[in-house]
Image (tube, rainbow, N blue to C red; front, side, top):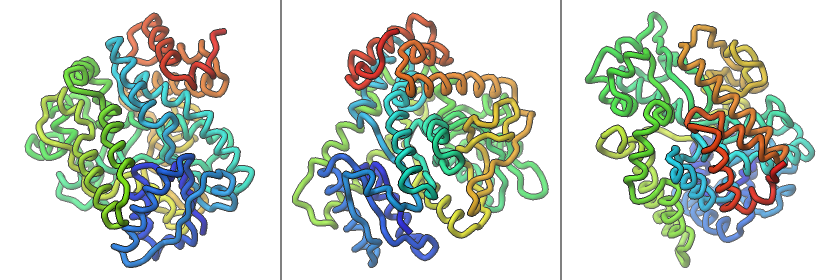
Length: 448
């Protein structure tokens, strides 16, 4: 089996390789191909992978290439982990709206829209290459913004494009621990869009147990989202939202917290990862240690701006695997035809009846050799969540169309429609500054 990782020089690629090493008995990979446009980054990551293989005692064969057709041809699975514009672009994505008093975040708000505008054309081109050279391949997408990118690539690949995110699984694990139950013994009723999801219910086979958790201040305090949103608010809405919903529920607080900080998340990661990639002369074992130290520092600072806004002390703590675990779990379920349950980004069909069947949503799915099949969520979605999902889906649709047509008017429309952008005037100013600071956008988007 051939597995291709597009964005193979990315910082988190060793997480994927490690997950494949741990699952080598269940995922029979014959060849792993890392594709990236930067040979220095490929070399640096390749050194880390050699360190992992030596530590594991077995090497899964991998090679690197800058030729996307070579990487994709004949692949069975293509993992996508691109960052178009690199971290330099992310820093601009976040800085521009903040200058106008609007949230600056990688995937939520204007930053996510700008990220999508430059990412979607590249990802659709990749999907077309897959359709031509590996028509039976599955695209497992964790390129952000994952929901929009998955919906755009499904226009080419249909249901063979599946979006993954580790946010729902992480929250479900934390909730299970607070309930003192194993996650596999519970059913998690999740609905929404990528980075806009809610845990509406938890069932143990006999009854609904989420109300027990919501009523227990001590148990809620053990869940990061309980500390972030506060027990009173969670009881008011009767659900536990994804951590990214904090940016909608407490938008002004977050903007103030980011402005008080020394730098945005993107600027911090740009500085931190530059040090990792600049290192040279290390053995594979030394490169692995350097990477792990950088990863630990990165993980501790995750969602720091939201914790600061909420007045929550401490650092982010995540047990279990992240998005690499979600991606490889989907591969394992398809290869093994297991019918595993995973929360994924897939075409809605009828899971959320208030959205059309092509809209990509984030819901529980049964995964087997035929792909990911969404489970019906139903009509009883709380009104406030439904309204927000519908509003953000309209933004996503406008963004996808703008990205594929190069229409500046549609890009401004997407920004202006977003619930976190206060006016059309502000949307115009944000887009104009994005074009001024990002040459790729200036070249692609003309005022018409």
